[in-house]
Length: 402
Image 1 (tube, helix red, strand yellow):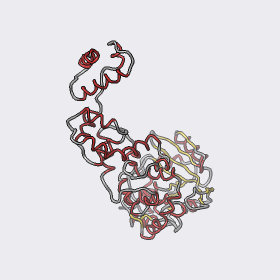
Image 2: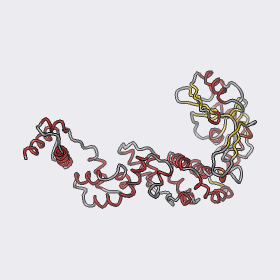
Image 3: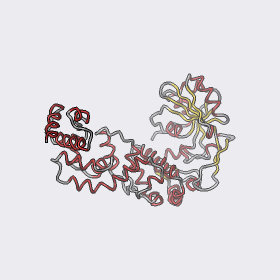
Image 4: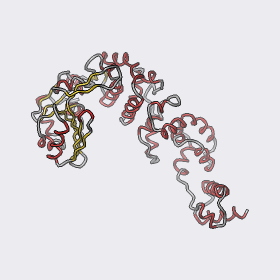
């Protein structure tokens, strides 16, 4: 990694695409903070969103900035935060510098305005995220040796109680290790393992949000394996993969190849072994939770039902359609299966061109017989016996005449 020396901070800022206009539009002093500074100082690819902190009224500052940029302002109220969207897809997040205190472990913090940027930096998670650049003079503020830890590729907490106060930081530490190809220093790793029982005190919603953030990373399987190593899954009464596997990669590959349109978080949940009801505990959408739980439960039965049926299209579809919406995908991701390959590549999209209205036009009154006839027509079409609407209608006439 090549770090930008502090003396060159101004030059680095000027080189950030779409940030020059923000510098020109600043209505007063501000600080570039957080991951933006970390990525800038390690010369990672620039992003088109930036995090600013101001000592004072962030909403008022953001309003003036939006006006000068010709952008739009969105305020959030909580914690004094606002967002300015400008220049097509670029945006700036503006927050009031603040302090945080924790009344008890794993609780949400009590927040108050900070009197200085240094107070704000002292409440952050890791030293590499606790740097700031003052604007517009481009002075680097690095009280906690973040530059040195970037150079040494270390994830280090700011103080010994960090993981106890907020156990979600353990999830984030594992994410940064994988995303940046860093490693926790020995003391931080020890603190994470000692604080692991605290994750059981987190609300289900906070656990869900951390997991969903992991699933959006490029290598979520490595992050989960690292969390398993730290004992986090045991504290949650679930099982993360003990080593990086290709299950999530296969799920993502199949999802893309067959245009299934499932979000990465949905796919990620399929890779976690959890007891029935746990997804409810972490507030996962009921429909998604049902599909994920059914997939784990039904996989062996679907695999058994498909054994020796790769050349029986209608039977393949019947077996798949008896299971939940995620079961076929999960089963194929777990192990290659020729019948399921045929389902996704040839059979999943097979539809009749006739419907109940056509059967009524042929004289069949509304009754269970309508479903029976349509089912038989679809079976024949899946088996390649019907080539189009004309043949479907002819077959329907034959069935009604029986």
